[in-house]
Each structure stands twice: as structure tokens, then as C-alpha cells.
Length: 149
Image (cartoon, rainbow, N blue to C red):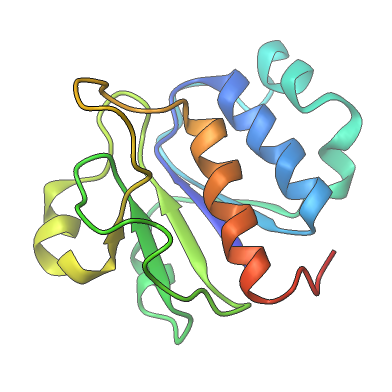
């Protein structure tokens, strides 16, 4: 399973997500441009001493991931289907947008059935990215009975 962060902007979120990925043996892919340096002290602090335990890859673009055989799922506050309305295979690619701009509308147009959301009270813009990743990742891992943990 992979977590993909599309152009993340906040180093603390990425650090927290890296920590969650380390604790669940999940790979993390960062799609550039990043809104921070990977040497950022806030990024390192949020990930604590978990950095050696996570497989992190940086990519210039997301296209190669979307052309693989692995099923991919996008997560957005603008989607209408709940994240619990699908089944996640063990090789799922879970894609989350930037904290400030989300995912490009082109993705919504091209793959509308691959978009899911976490329900929340109307009037709230979104959940924190690190919280959203944890919610969805644990649901996806539950589908394979947490076999990789």
C-alpha cells in the first residue's frame, strides 16, 4: 500500500504522515513541488525518530503512479462518496492533495468514480491532512486484516 501526497505544503503534516507510514509499513510518495525542504527541522521533528523506518520516494509527477496496474483512490472534501464505500486491496495507492489547493480538477474530471471523502459537519472546509491520511489508511489496512502490520 502507498500513501501519495500531491504537492504537500506543510512540513509538520508530512512528518506526521511519515510517522504513521512507518508504524504501518506503508510507503510514502511525495509529488513535487513540495512547499518545504526535506531538510526542514519541522518536518524532521514531526517525524521524530521514525524516518529510517519508512520508505519515502519523491517524484516529479504523479502520472507514472496512475499508469500502473495498482488501483488508486483520491481523497477530497469535494467528493460525494464516503471513504467507507469502497474496498481497498493490499496494493492500493491512496492519493491526497495539497493542504492549500487539494487535487487538480483534471483528476476529478478524468476519474470521478475514484474520489472519496471523509464525512464531516457542513460548513467545515476540511480535516487536517495528517488526520485524514490516518483515518483512510487504517480503514484500508482493515480490509486486509492488518496483514502487513
